Length: 65
Image (cartoon, rainbow, N blue to C red; front, side):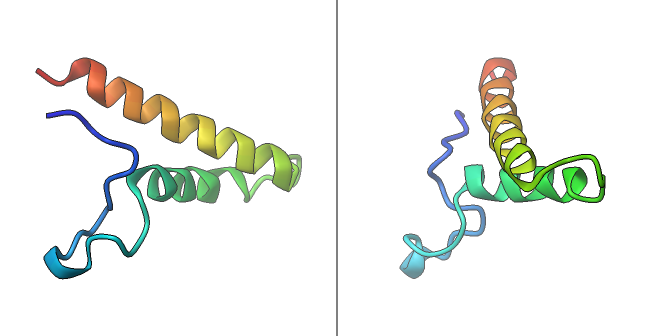
């Protein structure tokens, strides 16, 4: 089963169009790890978090059978 970046993280059958997508959720988690550093700008953290999310989704799709 492929991981779709636009699928919702915690889908509720009647409300599946609401909430964070997997891509947004993965990026938010990655950004939490990047922000504690004083040496990282917010722009860098945001860009890096989105790249991490995209790479994670690509890797999940590559290794699933």
